[in-house]
Structures are given as structure tokens and as C-alpha cells.
Image 1 (cartoon, one colour):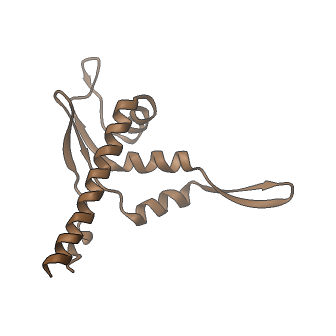
Image 2: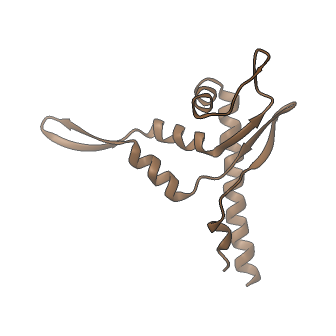
Length: 124
């Protein structure tokens, strides 16, 4: 099975979100997910016992932010609304339609990688 595509950076895929608004979304690889989990892991002491906890909400938000590469035609008034970490977080935390769109499209991309692997395996 040729796994060379995993060594290439995922540049993302453009999807139409609403009318003339497009969002470029990429997959988040397992090692990236582990890093987000590690960053959001902390220790908590309760009654003298130390527990390791993961802030799963923050981890999920970090992963969703990482799937967004760029967008076009999002405005704040007449000015462009830049695609940066702060604005990604803002949209994902405050605009449910946008959050659901990002989840749906990133899932499609992930399924595409699985299908790609199945095709490669079948053809070998």
C-alpha cells in the first residue's frame, strides 16, 4: 500500500458555505489530535488524590480550529473578516451553523482518506 500521500501536507479542500462564502478545510492527523489533547491535559487534586483530566471541550475546539485553513468573503461590516486563530474560535463558539458545517466537511475529508486507503489496498 502506497502511503506517500500521508507525508505530504494537507492543503485543504474548498467548500461553499453560504452563497459566495467558501471555507477551506483540511484533515487533522492523529499526531495533531494527540498534541491538542496533551496541551489540554492537567492534574487536579481532590481529597489528596491526584487525577489527570483532559478539557475535552477545549481539545475539540482546538481540533476544529485546526481544520480551518482559510475562508473567502466573510466580512465584518465592509471589511474582510480575516481567517486567524482568534476569529476561527469566535465563529466556532458563536455560530452553530458554521460549527456544524466544519464538522460535516472535515468528516467528509476524513472519510475520503479512508476511501483512498481502501482503493489503494484494492488495487495492489
